[in-house]
Amino acid sequence: MIWWIFALVFVTILSYLSDVGILPFMQNLKVPFFNASILSILILLCMLGVLVRLLSMAKKGEKEILRKRINELEKKLKTPQEEEE
Image (tube, rainbow, N blue to C red; front, top):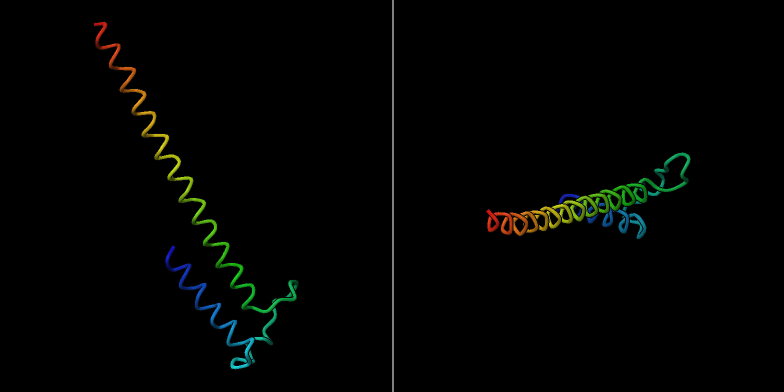
């Protein structure tokens, strides 16, 4: 995920330099059908990548919590059964 952040920072810096006028050629590059500069599309793609990564990590964390809870409940269930025998 850190690479997505580095890419986002790099593209954001390029976008700023383009807006200030240091890199004027970047403003002329347009994406057809979107009427947006290529830098805006790259920023959007980087943000989508970060969002998808964060959501997948959160989902994975929830699964791990549920697995731990299931293991705890199975141990509690096994303990009374062992005492009966």
